[in-house]
Image (cartoon, rainbow, N blue to C red):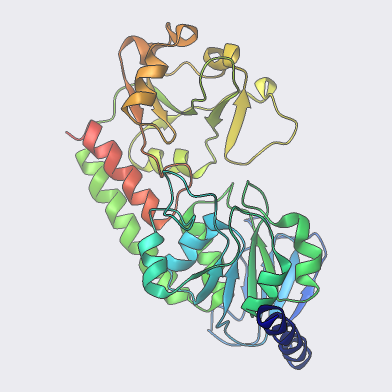
Length: 336
């Protein structure tokens, strides 16, 4: 009863806050060509400011102080720019997360900052959102952690932006999120630090000759993911000195296309890519052994030369923290 009363009071408080605020959201499906990161007021650090995003334009009267992330992927970038994250959605606890369902690469940062679990197992909970009483909600436009199906009901009550992380690097995301949260300076600082980390690592790496591909290997008989050149993993590896190739569009096995990965049948994997080097998404030594033993890819140059390398368990989503871990994994295997 006490919990229900608290939620009701939180809802009433939000209604009053929303009425008094000058935050508004336009639901028009219009974005800028570079991922909707252009914002009016961000350059001068002034408020109110207009934030363009994947679902239109949002006007924020003041700098957000209670941000809620419905995307566990985007939470890492928000933490990297020191945005005031009140709560975040959590995934199902596994070997890539802590016991709360926060990704392991930034879970200690979330604990230090006192970030609450918004709802577990990526199951949207409107009452939990009301209880958090956010002044900004961040939604991913796609992916397993996307709450895009609930955008209209969320945006009707809360200032909300929709972000597409599938076609942007975390640095580009940090710029967009920095403008929306008033953390532009922190975004620039984090990006500069990361770029230096990349540059220093590139000097240590001796990239093998020929092409390279990033494969999300799922075993025999299953669909295989092949990173697109526009995806964050590919773009990071190219900065480290590798020449990334992607699968041709006509081999795409899914109707719902993503910006970061293509999906092909197991039998078509060598038709999709036939590189001299393969990087395995979330891969470890066990994954490498399984890939090398797969008869379907036996004639792939990378398999013949045993140039197959796991990118580590946190490489499935690249942010400030996991990006450094992925870089370390590559340096460990290919450092000169």
